[in-house]
Length: 623
Image (tube, rainbow, N blue to C red; front, side):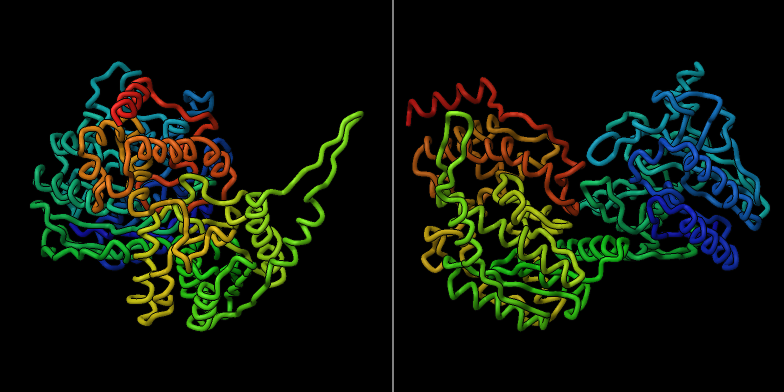
């Protein structure tokens, strides 16, 4: 069987463009002798389109376009993901019933589900975690078959088509139906039991670091176990859910009946290939570095995001630190140096070292640049507001700007005043340079360095930002554009005399330890809280559980010091940090959980369990 694997760039909310792409790929596939053309899940609408699914006219247009793509399948079989509509029934949201469905057309004839008598094959397993919330909009086949009083296995059925003049059964299923372990409903096995001769998984799977390896394990083992060739078709592009951007990596793959890879499409790039499942030979799979995948993801998603909104230029505040340096190098590679303006905004607290490092970075990248001191404007704010008297009937108070208040004034002056004004004059936008470690605990100034049109690094821990900087030098620019001194200097906000990196005074976050601690709170599937951390600490296995290279006793001399640090950051994470994050720019997802509408949050106060408080009391008593 010759199957055309159509890994297309799906543009969310632009079905007319996606239909045109599909029709062109369909013609090409049949011209190249394909028996079957396979497209990704929801390839006409896009996967992440918010509540656009509630617009009946949009859904009806998708149904019409699906019928158009089916009618054009005159030379063979076309499989694609699209919304399915049953206007005779109501969904659980009180609207006409919608399905995330596989559509299959054989020589212009739309195939119908043998049990449901619908002109499509509904998805069985609907994910409702992380960024996924399909049950909000779609009805699934398990509920449908239960409603009809039929056996659960009847919701899954292969598609009867004709291939090369002979009858064949295609096991067409959608994305999550292949990730069935936790659902205890084995869709691929049922398709095999009902006579499918090939499995075709139509997916819309966003990139997450590490998912590629797990995906290969799952689909390779399915093909080997069932002794069937398996075709995995994914899309490329960038989609979002309003607060979190997701890059789709493609990586469409064909496995033979032994579970060996016979075709692997490139990452983050549209691709088209006709593969003969009978004659294709196994080929080795590449194992790129983690940083290569991260950089591909960032460049792909940021590039699409800017292009989608016709954004051509960027203004970046560069401080001489690693975060702004990586951001500057990323955007320079993406947009070219003539479209980048790098701005150093020193105050009395910025050292010659960091100012010189910022200057060296600018020279290496050869971008436009400017130096704008904030000293006079901060002094003006202090003069105007420090000591100002506020009044009401019979009462007055004098306000004072503390050194801490003036730290925030500096951060806001840089972003809300200088960067925003320069971006307007340069016909540009400016990003937030925050990393995930700082975003996690709100170590950023609201409306200051927390502002921007996008936070491209906010799903990377600090150690990953350093590694990405090394990758930019070594693999992207192939020379030292980020000066070595930026990697070596102590990270510091430089907002007071107490934050002088030349004296070794830097950020309060101990990145080697806190990155691992924060990651356990945020990214583990079975997430960790201070209770588990304190148990591991008490039992002497914290280093092992978190993967620490340094002894925890080298960082904290007493139990009380460890507990105080733990509570400081938990309170920041669950307290004011949430207030800041819900007002932060959109985050580009890279790791397992990203802030925004991937990791869902509510504005609440921090909570410590009763067991934690008891453990804390016991440890402090014996300290």
